[in-house]
Length: 197
Image (cartoon, rainbow, N blue to C red; front, top):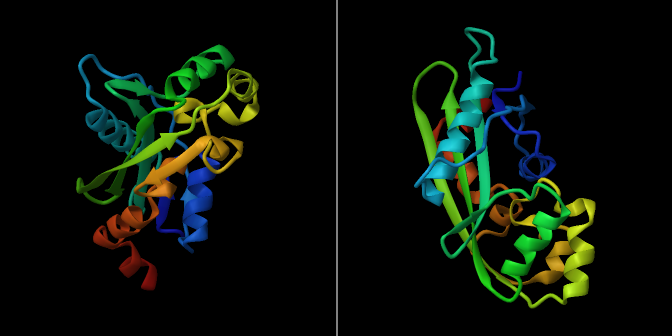
């Protein structure tokens, strides 16, 4: 019986957890990811990760003893929050801003217990130094499938990794789930004890 639910359809988060040997099943949650007026990046990722986990929790049958993990990742450049691009032109616009600059990648991770109101949450920030990308490379990359569904319109684990000069902090966070911090949060929530029963 799987005691952990991943409230995400992200193949990247799935791979990161599987690579760590964590057993889980997926219940994707579909929520409105729009930011509120005057909502800062930390508040945004905390709220969205919680809402994703809560939406999946509400789909569970009663008396199911599980932990539900929700996560949300954004890119922050200065005071601008960058989510996922809506199209190739939007991706190109994002990449033009990121090229040659340092930005932050922020992920909120929330874990809920199906049998209580207890919430475990962590926010992890990594800094990414982006190389200067030629306009031609940038335009070609922004039209590729890889930029879809990626905060900041790039994938460090794919071709977009060639544009990254340096990551300060968790690299798995830049992919979409900070592994060490997520495992620590699962431990705090009692997942590994549950798994041993």
